[in-house]
Amino acid sequence: MKLAEGIRRVGFRKWYERQLLRSHGHLALTFLCMVGVFGALESMRGTGSWAERVEEGLTALLCALAGVWALRRYLRLLHHAEFAAHQAECAECKAYGRLDLVQSDATGERVTVRCRGCGHGWRIEL
Image (tube, rainbow, N blue to C red; front, side, top):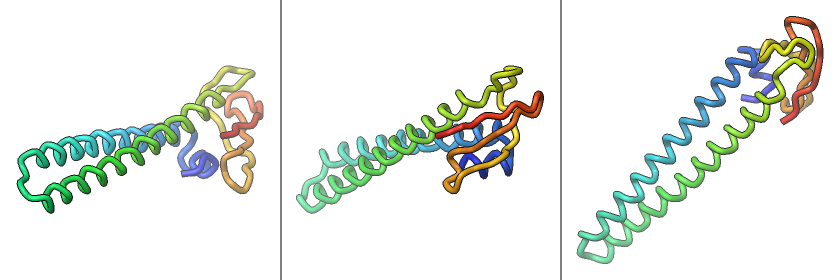
């Protein structure tokens, strides 16, 4: 979910929480993929024929590729959430995450927000 859409629909704090949950879901997927890689490599040791070894090797490769994708996705989502979180504090009253969406660009990643407490406005850019 884009930043602008998230602030509009559920507010900044819930958007941030959901981004963290999504990113950590990808981290869990990375862990499961690595278990799959080690399981496939372990089963290759006891396999007799070359066809079965190739099949297990392809399984290990597929799990490794899925794990690398999930790890990259985890890091990207986490980075975006943290980068936005560092910009979500009002400079005037120091309120964190209590903001309303004023305007966004076409991509939804550059938004102008206003503090609910004091009305101070600023931009958040990802």
